[in-house]
Amino acid sequence: MASPPPAGAAQHVRLEQLSFPRLLFALLRQRFSGCLQVVQPPPAGDEAATRTVWLRGGMPVFTDWMSPGLVLGQVMLRERMLDEARLMQALQSMAGRGGLLGQTLVAQGAVEPSVVVEGLRRQCAAKIVEMFALHSGVVTISACVQEAPQELASVNVLELVRRGVAAHYDRARIMHEMRDAFRGHFAGTAALQRYRPHFRFRDDDSRPLDAIARGGVTLEQLESMATSPQQATRIVYTLWACQMLRVGTAAASPTPRAQPTPRPPSAPPVAQASDGDFETQLTALERKIESGTHPFDLLGIAPTAGKKEIRRAFGDLSVTFHPDGLQAKGLSHLRERVSRAFAALSEAQMLLGDKEKREELRQRIERGEDPTQPAGSDPTAMARAALESEVIAKEADKLLRAGRFDRALERYEQAAALAPEEPDLQAAIVWCRYNVSNKDLAAGAKADTELATIVQANPKLARAHYFRGLVLKDLGRTKPAIEALAKAIEHDPRLVDAERQARILRMRAGGPASSTPNKSTETAGRFGLKGLFGKK
Image 1 (cartoon, rainbow, N blue to C red):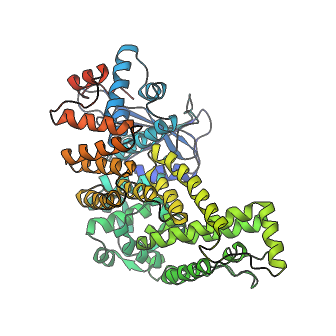
Image 2 (image 1 turned 45 degrees about the horizontal axis):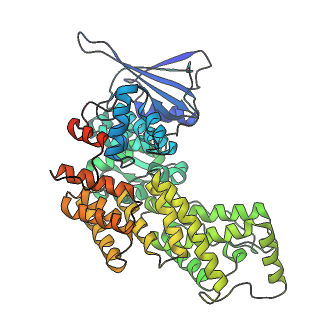
Image 3 (image 1 turned 45 degrees about the vertical axis):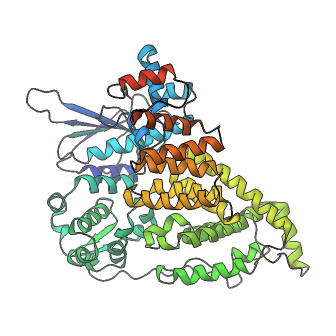
């Protein structure tokens, strides 16, 4: 695919010639907007199966085919974006009046529109992952007669390729597609370091990825570093399909580490450290923060710096110290420290972004005054930190309600860095960390232990009881889950969802609901969920 098709034209590609992950990446590079339609060869006597994907700027935004287990209601329920009672109420309304599930949920006030958008994004991603199983079929790429709505959210193609390969590619299939490229040495391209975080690789992928980034590594060496030979081959194929892997003689020698761009001696940055000395640079930044260094010095810029220099300096530091980049570097154990440091950098950037405050600080420095106060001794600074923490926590609450647990976790950690003694924030952090984990028994037990510690120290903290009840529900511990949810309701009767969750658990356990029976809930209990999800 040398170029995207012109408006009104169409290109046809066979999956036997160009695999689905390579096709997706080609469309991403071209920033293609239009439709991708796959027609599979039909089994004997059946009609051909057609699947259509809408893309915007090279990224999928919508799909239109039925897939068992991936209708919108099931996806939102499984991802904990919606509870069972609200889903049942919406489905019963649709049974009588018709309509789409997302529109019905919003109309009933069950969820915010942003939650439906996120649910559709996750549904789209999950359905496209299924397409990686296809070995054959004709793909038609063309402009769409009707464009997808602008409010739909895009799917990260690089993460999609990683997930699809992990789900549907084995060693034999990879060897068949890569052929001679599967043998010899491997090395990452210059783009790998830049885009590696976008793949969202697992923590245990770090060693093979680091070796590929250095270059001159063989498959046998990668397999010795990976948890399994299958894992190593999938990493190799993922990078190869996304054109971030050099193979053969071009990859035989280690890739030289790029040298950082020189900076003026008057403004040496703290960031731009290699992985090997990252912790050293982090420690140096932490010392600056603890000593009360003023924002200009913290960002590594002169007091005369303007808005563009401030933005550029903060952007450079963000590349190195953003918490989301730790996993790709194999440094997830430093997340708590990095989150505190990043919160300080963000605070410095926000202050310097205010023209009046920036000028006031500059004048104090020029007069030779100390623009900082010792940590914890300035009541004004403490009040400001508490206020900033509250503002950030409110942003995190919105993300949490939208089911964006990864982004909510980042904001809660920033808020907690400003108010470390706030138990409500600590409970939210535990809940978000649990939701971004694989949510197995070990993760559930850890979250339960941490939340139990929080409620023991803060027995009236309703939110902690509520989160613990949901974790216990996942662990299958119905009775203690009901007790925890009841505690949440006792301390905050406004937690309507806690009451719904407790009622559902009691009904499943065969007991009576604690609240006054609701007609729609009784109907839901009789008929269950099977067959009521609807098409979308």
